[in-house]
Image (cartoon, rainbow, N blue to C red; front, side, top):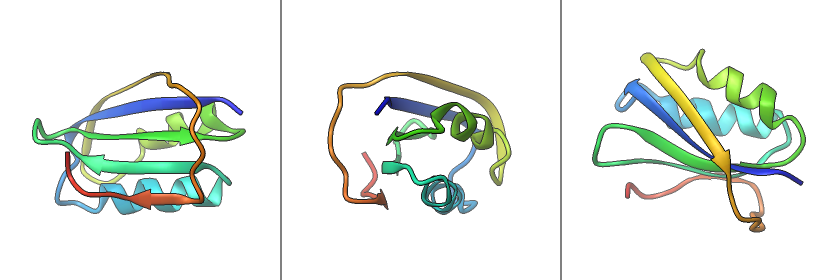
Length: 87
C-alpha cells in the first residue's frame, strides 16, 4: 500500500486539526499517525488506499490551511491512525 508523509501549513494548531486528520484517516481506512511541529505545522504519515482523496480532505480541516504538501515515505506498519506527541 502507498505511504506518504504530509505537511499542513497555516493556522492549524490549537483548532482540533490533528483530531480532524485522525477521524478523516480512520473513516478512509488509512493507518498512520499525526503530530504538531514546533514550526507551527501539522505533519504525519498515512498508508492505505485512498491517499489522494485523503490529501484533498486535509485542505478542508479546521483553522486556516495555506498549503498541503506530501511525498512518498518508506513503508511502515501502523495498527491504526494515532495522534502522537509533538515533535
